Image (cartoon, rainbow, N blue to C red; front, side, top):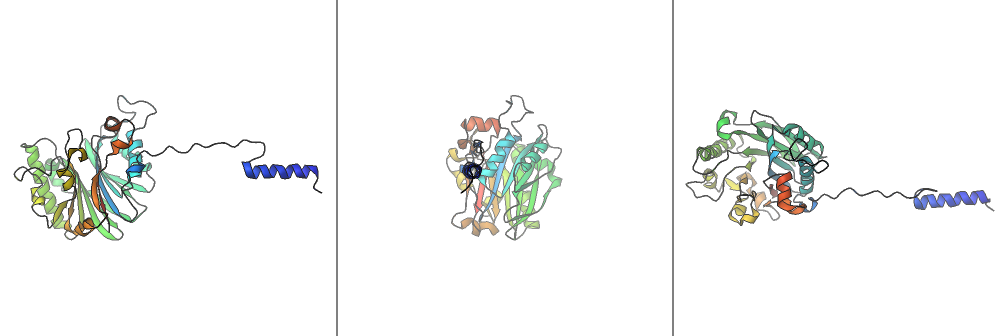
Length: 316
């Protein structure tokens, strides 16, 4: 026969196993807040995704900016959630702002993204270009550097080139942010010259390599030949392709710059990527991130950017 004290001890052990303790109430643990951008996912482990995203004076909403409400999500918070939700491999970022703490905020953003790294080089311009990229998959970073430095006045923001491999295959992503302002101006001429310089550079240094040229190019793909700054690329469909051309030709509701509206953010690839682009499951999209948060476009524009990301997905 088990003594009474033994029966009490056995009972307590039974309760401990069932309830997690004896004489204590079970504590509930609140689940982590859901990522509102999880439903925006476009990436997969077996595919390569390259995105371009103008983050408009990043960070647009932070304790350093007037009007910030203490305790509300900052631009860094929201962009980190968005990138985690999208599950892409490379993001070319434009408008990392010098005058609003963009460099430190970029470092904070990288730190907020487990399995990611980033590169950003400050220049004397008030806004700069950077890369975010995954390091926990098939992508292997090689180097990142500014190119065409002698043409600072033409580009205004010097192009930033990233060399990497994806599943052992060399790729190059050149991020650009071409000169703004309307048609018929000296700025339009600079955009046209920038495109000619990029074509020459890729043909000289990256012949035969899978190359992406991505970014806010500040002009329309669908302008007529006399006004189209991209005509040198469009005239060579056997060598170059804008993967977002169908988006530019489509309804304005699908464009990357809704406030105008216009479609200014583009992804251009060399012919080495045409076979992957033609495979079932490949494609390009403007991701309507504003539809995934409370407050819609006004909240997105206030806290994140006035541009939406453009993503190309390639099936190997």
